[in-house]
Length: 101
Image (cartoon, one colour):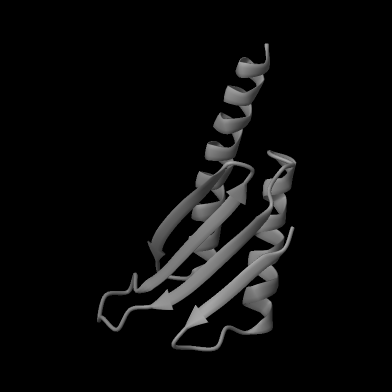
């Protein structure tokens, strides 16, 4: 799956982008009709430790899912967002199965 990663106001290193790519690729296991995914990485200028915002939009035929997580690290945000997207994709797949029967 093609993952379009954009980092806002900073430059993401190659390791982070590769990690996000691998994590988002796993979503194909749960729903094979994923068209594309866009990931936005933002850092808030606050004294709070959880200042990293990970936002992901996954496009599937006829719909798209958006997940936004705020964490201490982008890796943690990627894991949490991917887990949330897995649940949403599984739910959509079940609905489509029920609809076809």
